[in-house]
Image (tube, rainbow, N blue to C red):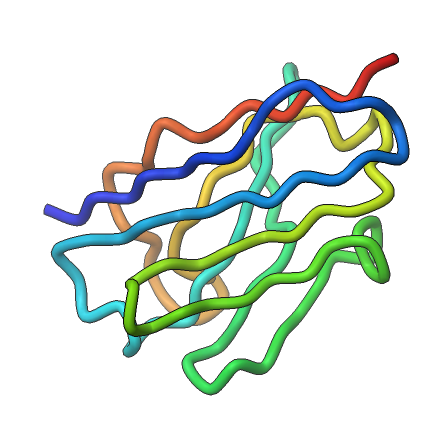
Length: 118
């Protein structure tokens, strides 16, 4: 089965930056559009950003201009550079296939916690 391993989370002050990584294994990574999702306590998981196999990107309005998604197909890894972080960005962040392009992979990874707080 697919393995997705997110890393790079932590505690950061408002206005700070973090870079998340997600290593995927047991899939033909380069064939899939990938996305970063997040889930805050009491809320549904939502798509934050996505990147196609050719590198075209899409961002949710609430992260546009602050987050950048990228991928390295040679490393089967997708990244999320997060700048100008806000307290409302606090959530567990996950990577997976872009659900708009097809069924997400199961199981989901464990995610990585981002806490934005002073």
